[in-house]
Amino acid sequence: MSDQTTAPPSWHRPLLHAALISLGSVLVLFPAWLPRGETVALENGAVELLQLALLAASAAFLMAASSHAGRFQPTYKGMSFATMAAAVAEFEDALHHFIPSGWSKLAFVPFALVSIYYFVRYKRETLRFAGLASRHPASGFIGAALIIIYVFSRFFGSAEFWSATLETDDFDPELPSICRGYLELVSCYFILVGVIGFCLPIRRRESPPS
Image (cartoon, rainbow, N blue to C red; front, side, top):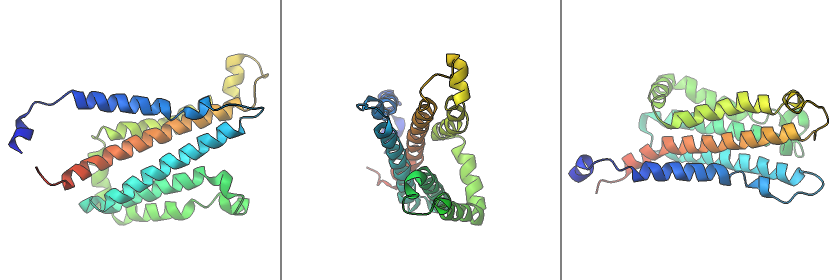
């Protein structure tokens, strides 16, 4: 244990992590290389499925980490249910085949309510966690994901933007939605990276000392 505390920090591991994150952000866009026919339905479907998979994985990581989070267990559960709500909302287009369209749009509400319950019921732990998380590097990925979703995807995913940029209204009508879908996909990947960043310190703390 003393050797671990006195050894100088290694630059190899941060460099490897940065390289893996950069590689993942490229690989996650693999639907762009799918063969295209007359429509982009296959590509759009793959993008939506990847978004769902990334959000579901994030929720699973948070729920698994909650059992090791100590006093922050309710906070991790709340974040897990919030991520589940986002995943269900993202899957709304598929849910309307099984649930009437009016109700399918509200399918995320139960998960959101459970998330709010954990945050409000244990608000002291939630506020404490927020203070600690604000100084954690993983918060940068979560913040970037939210900015991409609520700012860049709305901006670059609008028909007005492409009409003004191309100086014509004669462009593929699917272009704005494709752009928005890929930006949301990257943001889901950033959420997963941020979630893993929050879960790894807990796992390390639970590991027995060598």
